[in-house]
Image (cartoon, rainbow, N blue to C red; front, side):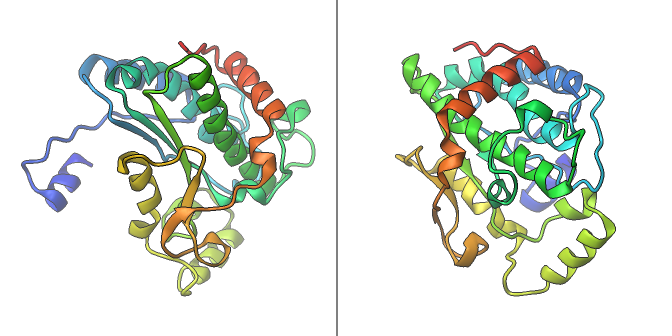
Amino acid sequence: MTASLKNDLGNTIDVSFILLDLGVQASVRKAAKEVLETVTQIDALICNGAIAQVPSQKLTVDGFESQMGTNHYGHFTLQALLFPLIEKSKGRIVTVGSMGYNMGLKTIKFNDLNWDKNYTANDAYSQSKLAQIMTVYELQDRLEKADKTDVKVFACHPGASRTSLIRTSGSLMTRFVWQIMKLSPFVQSAEKGAYPELMCATEPNLDQAGFYGPTGRNYWTGPVGSCKLEPHAKDKVVAKKLWEVSEKATGIKWNI
């Protein structure tokens, strides 16, 4: 990866690579420890890793439903462990969600987080992205209450972008349909899909209340701006419970 980046951007760039599997809590902890031992400043932590539309229920080595375990719990632990350095750096945390947050149950299924009953690829994926987004706004509230507002936290989404996400984890039929959709004008390049997270990582005086992504039809493509976020994504009661459940599940207590 470092060789590829230097090939694209020039040998003078300072870039390093740390192996991390978000679906394995031990891997997240190991990578975070390595970051803290080798990095002196974090200007922006961009939480962009994900799996999607896993066709049948799979559990991580830690016993979590794979999409929830990778997309939410993996990032939850990573952010918590790196938070002291982010705070010291007066940095930012950028969580890359998805409009998929609004395509499933529209809440967190606390009584069956692993979807042992009635599993569907879309519902499980939707719940994982909703959990990520909810955590952003819950973290904002907790930082404000603790008077730690030097750390800025943002939520964004990439719209419909030509990435390898579906190809790496979706079913054969889902991959087939997505391959066709990728040829349409309703899907944008992966580069444009990265614009919202880059804006959240760098734009000065950006309103943390926003949910940033393409603003065109269905929020699939178009200029980047603040998109409408449905009320269930900011349900305070659910978000608070999710935070507590996440700390218990991961064994991680945030230093806030």
